[in-house]
Image 1 (spheres, rainbow, N blue to C red):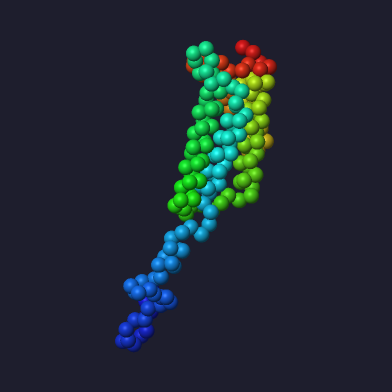
Image 2 (image 1 turned 45 degrees about the horizontal axis):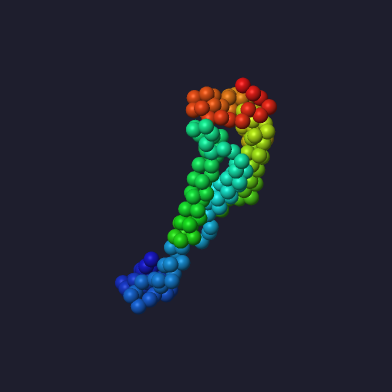
Length: 185
């Protein structure tokens, strides 16, 4: 930025430090180009890695294949691998070439995310005992009613209908054996 007084003198540059080429110091350029805060992508990537690893570990007893068709563990396994790979890519990008983005999440957001992860981990561990329909219904109820505080008719319909529709799709249409648990059809 240049400053010019009211008389006819030449404008005076206001840049405090110049290098040999007449521009701003290259160190100052590098500092201004580098993000000054950790990006949320770094935390999301780490979260993906943790969730994927925990889900891989928790679902290790589920069969990937059963009698020449996909077993109940194939989808969780595939999604877990995608989460871990995606997380590694996000973290790697932030470590190699940081991109300025939204600030790191605040404490309440982190607590919320950790609570959802804990609910999902409990769901995976109870999956075989309670069965698909009951464990997924309880997971949705815990998230919608417990965390989100959504006490609406739509939320109740979602808690009841989603596990039933998913069971019908996987068990009846795709032929995937899902653990019946307490409820057996």
